[in-house]
Image (tube, one colour):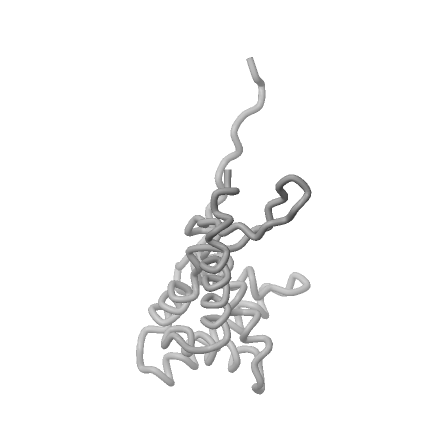
Length: 156
């Protein structure tokens, strides 16, 4: 009889203002050097800027942006008999959401602009309109997975 137990799943906590798990996930990805208060301030200011620019609920825009950037397929390298093949793999929704948030933040950091909250708000608005670098990254990933469909049988 095995004495190992299964690990408990950790669910993302809610943020203090909007009581939303997605907001907390984004804050935890913005986080650098343990400065969580700064990460919260950056995100809340960008949500405020999005409300001013679009006159829509900023949580709805954030949810749309993450949903539109979330990939369905990714390419993983698989080693088969000495050769390495790029194999397209379907991913789960949680992993896709994490990738989408990472791509959104990475592309907003590379944007030209004044401050991080300014760049993040514009990147989120562009992603909700299906524009921007994060959307391009998703399309590039899907295109690569589509072109390597021939190696899908190695995914076992």
